[in-house]
Length: 282
Image (cartoon, rainbow, N blue to C red; front, top):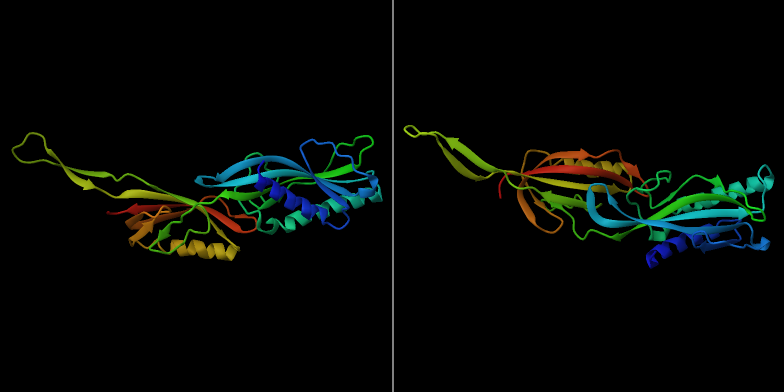
């Protein structure tokens, strides 16, 4: 747990504490016992959870940190009563407040899905929440309606972006470019009067360059436009590909643009992709 993680958790706590009907909100350590005076109920506690360091699948660029947490909305209420119904309604309001301000004022951002939990939605959102559930009752303790959540931020951002003939088509999300080795061209020739033949070295042939990444846009329409802009380069012509580290690869023909799985939506829309180029000559 670092200072950035704590800043994320404090932002979530402030959101929960500001929900109408909540009288008290506190950030607690895992499994910390909390005594809440009756005068401060209904109350909310936010328990820090585990953090994960993630990257988008097949895109080892940048580092996304997903900070887990668990919220408990507490009050004196017995299931089946109007007080309990009010507690459930308050818990739903807390859940909606967090979901409605998922970026936490710019502290959080969309990112890869968790490897450890699959019940948080949206899976790639800046802030994700799980379903409400009733905690096990303990004698002398307030009733608690709980929900899990996680908020993430990019701890490390890629420093460069690829470009195609100077057009920054890929800067909306992390991506990597892998340059393959050229195929050596050999031609076998047979000559009259000679036993066997000669192998002629014709030099380096074309090589394949692969790019994997994620495109991001504010809307589905904007994402479709970004994809169409890339696909417009599949025209048989050769272009100069500039890699994220600034190296130019001239005479590259864009051969394939593949969408890797469905689109994902959080605060923005995201599409994983793979591009295959063929560098014809250097």
